[in-house]
Length: 280
Image (tube, rainbow, N blue to C red; front, side, top):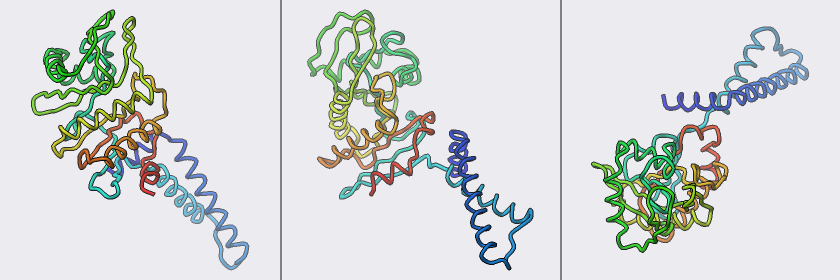
């Protein structure tokens, strides 16, 4: 069933590719058949039966090319860490989950936190839009980190260094909220860049190493939302993988690092290509 689901997502995301590959396969088979009959006249390939064979092979080839996996694993050399990449829902994964936030660790939906961002979805889905528990845990977790007061149009006024990370516990679920973006005090608009992202991830891995307790660490496609990095999906994914590998080579973070991609990115990636690139 999983194979059929991946096939369907591959076809639905790029239906023209199925048509292209089917036609290419059909053309190649037809050319071969014509070559055989030309050089060996005794062999006859004609009529509806031959057409059906050529078309059938073309369709099989087209389906094979349209299929793309929704999950891969990249084992890292010289250690027992595996980077897993899947299409799915971050909130249903086992282990600790990562949420990127702004330097203010805002919790008010609206200007400070868009309800369409992962942070906003987290506040609504896990806290029902009532962030008191989040605020209390952030204050406790970051009490030893020096912040600074900033006059801001809305939301919290205390901001923390990029990479600051707070462990948030909700029932039995654990989340690592880490500061990825700067926020404009006049507009609350957030922004980041590659250097800032790398710095934030470095701090995140250090905290994840302490808190994971051997459990999987689950990350979204960090930098793909409102952070403003404006990088293609594959580049962002490669940055995440490279960061995870770099930190693991220094010291293991955990045995399984899972990058969870939203289904709307399925058409942007072929995970077979990603795995081939990082395992060759």
